[in-house]
Length: 47
Image (tube, rainbow, N blue to C red; front, side, top):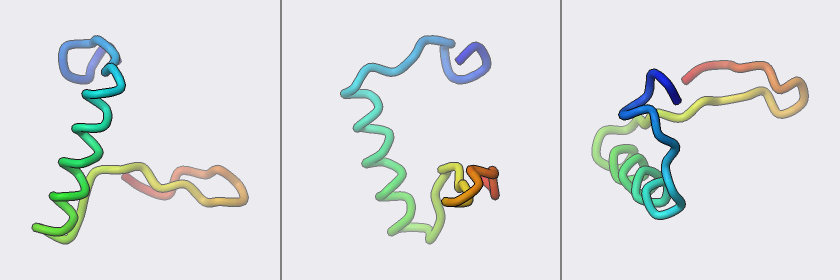
């Protein structure tokens, strides 16, 4: 978290707000910021 926002972890409400905002972003723009992992290997595929 050192390099993200103010460096403090989000509480549950802030995390839920972020997820809702990203879902809205997906609907409005067709993409959102989430990491994607391969289900079997756990390999990071993209963000």
